[in-house]
Length: 260
Image 1 (tube, rainbow, N blue to C red):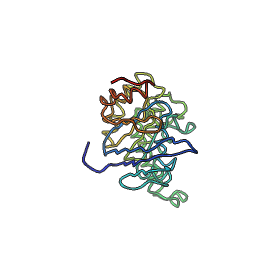
Image 2: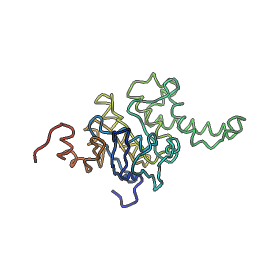
Image 3: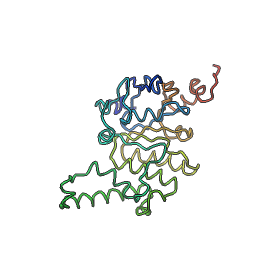
Image 4: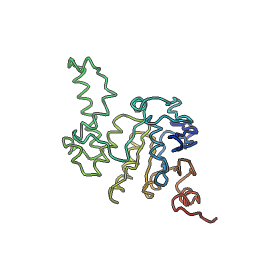
């Protein structure tokens, strides 16, 4: 870990729905360039936590900061522009749009040409559209999807849809990439390829990555540090080997106390 300031700082964050505390008192620091895992049993609050980081939910306690900017009440689209992109547990592509258009959608918030140029079709508009097309193709090549650029996204095999969703998230030029169970529904070979892909894109794009995943070999294989949530609270944090042997973690997953 570097000694620089955290890219993302989560300070005792939590959210309550009625009388239910879905997430409570969570602290987390993510530093530039880290690849960190977030694990926990079903219903532990992992996706709710992602929703707090991305502005889908507003915390009822604590704070979330990106590069020391407080994100409280910042809308999701603005948080995306500030540098946090995500994928979803259930794939959320635009199924009736082409593969390349799914990637180009992410560029429009960064487009240099404005509304007037778009309406009047000024030269800036065509130049901007050409740049987006070229960048989108570059991303598709990285993910081995360029041959499918004109296919409808819904017609891609499941594993390729997952890759396309990650490509779209990266196209928004994030500083922090949140991956919500990217290996869900993948076969063992696809999962192995995904492990290599996550490590590759972290290095190539100089990203910080936070990964929710139930596939333990994937998490242990790519993550440098791991946080563990159970019933909305952090119960452990450390290196993969420390987490693998942590009695609280074993108890949370197995549902029985581990004798010391």
